[in-house]
Image (cartoon, rainbow, N blue to C red):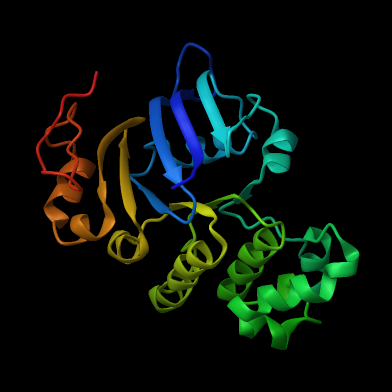
Length: 255
């Protein structure tokens, strides 16, 4: 399968001599969903901000569909097809749902087609098109934020804390839509999520960060059956090791 996102030895952080994330290595295929897990402060949001170009990488290479992205260049990342849904959703709250979506569509002649494609994933938004984004419920705002990202036809879709401020029942409805998006469009998806079991149910691959290091990586469904591995990774049991649950479950030392 085509590798859509490749990260090689990426160091990320806010000071050159103090990276928060070290040696972030991952290859994500078209249509693959990767959930990025870890305790608070592990470096998950820092990783997404770096991949999207909003934060310059301190070292390493990020490639989208064969195009190397210049560090810290958000416009270049967006042009290459990398789209971020931030944890605060970044909606224009005084504009309507329809106006927020329209801003994301580049080809105006295709506006109706693009809008209908988003509404197919989120039918609830069809009832709210003329409502200001600030008047939406939290779940509706998240639908709009994701829908606006989809209107940009991402090759790589980054979603930071999809469940932020949402009831678990809403998260249960939204996560299968992310799976469907990846299957339908071939977008590679990187999902940061605190509802671990729900995320594992729709993810092809799970990656756990702790103190900025990848401490566990494996098949999402296999890890869902072995919650102890996730718990150990969160708590630091066997830290400095990199078990691959998708293969044999054996631990390999991380350099």
